[in-house]
Image 1 (cartoon, rainbow, N blue to C red):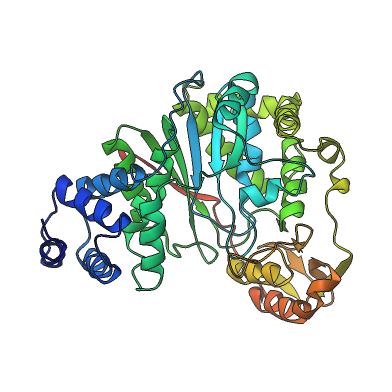
Image 2: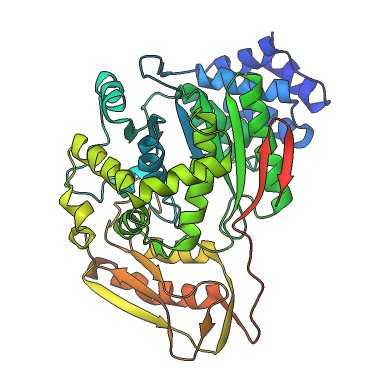
Length: 443
C-alpha cells in the first residue's frame, strides 16, 4: 500500500477502505508518511469529502492512535458533552453539577483554551487550589463517590489528530466537515463515554457562521457516533452574541455559580437546561425533555446542584469558600466602562470581537505559551434587544495594570462590536435545531 495511490484515489472521488484509512493515520502518526503527502490527502478530502463510513473509520483510527480511557469501572451510563466553542461558553461548569445531581455520572476530560478566553480547565483553575490533574484511579473513584469529576485531557490522547490538525491549520484545510467531525469525535471516543451530547454553536462567534453549515457538521458528528456505537445527539445553539454576560475565567465561574443558584442570565440557564435534559435522556434518567427539565430545575431550587459543585471543588483541592462567596475569586485591579455613542436598541453584537477584546486584556492566549490573567475579562451590561441611551454603559472591562496597553484597543473593538438600531429587533432563538440519528428537528 502506498500513500500516493490513496491520495490519487481520494482526489478522483473514490471511497477509501477501512484498511487504507488506518494505513494513512498510522503511517502519518509514526512519521512514515511525510507532511506533504498528508497535506495533499487532506486537500483531496476538502474537495471530495468522505462518506459516513470513511469518516467513522478515520475517527476510530485517530482515537486509537494514543491513550484511550475505559470508563467501565464507573457505575451507570456515562454521558459526555462537547461544545464546538464560543464566547462566554461556561456551560460545562453548570451542566456537570446539574446532571450529576440527577444521578447521571459525569466523568469529563476538558481542554485549555487558545484564543478568546480560557477553556473549561482554565476557568476551573480560577478557583484557588483546584487541581485538574487526577490519576486514573482517583478520577474513577471520585466519579463513583460523588458522581462528578472534570480533569485535563491526557497528554497522549489522539496524537494523530493533534498532528493532523496542526497540518490542516497551515494548509487551509481546517474547514472540512469530515475532518472537523472526526477530530472532535475522536477525542470523545477516546475519552470513553457511552453517550454524547454535542452543543454545536452557530453565528458570528462560532466556528460555523451559518445555520446550514452548523447542521451539516452536527449531522456528520451524529453519524460518526451512531456508526461507532455511541448514542449521540446534537443541539444547534446560538453564538451570534456571547452566552451570558461574563467573558473571562473568574468572571465566568462567578456567573456559573449564580446560574446554579437560580440567579444567572436567562440565556445561559436555558441553554444549560436544554443540554442537560438531553444528557439525562441519554443517561436513562428521564423519558423526555419535559421530565428532564422538571428534574433539573428541582436540583437548582433545592440547592443540590450547588452542593454537587462544592463537592467536586473540595474533592479536587479547591477552595469552596470561593463558591459560597464568589467575590473571593480573583478580581482585577482596574475596571473601565465602555459607554454607548448612540441611542436606540442593541441590534447585534459581534461575539468574536468581544472575545478578542477579552483576550487583549489578558483573559485568553494569543500563543500556546501565553499566561492567562484569570481575573481579566469583559462584563456585558447590554445584550441584543436591550434599549440604550448615549453615555450608558454597554460593557465593563476588567484588567490588571500589566495589560493597560490593550485597554484602548479592547474598548474600540467592543464599541465596533455593538450594532445600535432605531427599532427593536426580533428576539433571536437560543436553540435552532436538534439533530439525532433519526434526522433534523428545526425549532
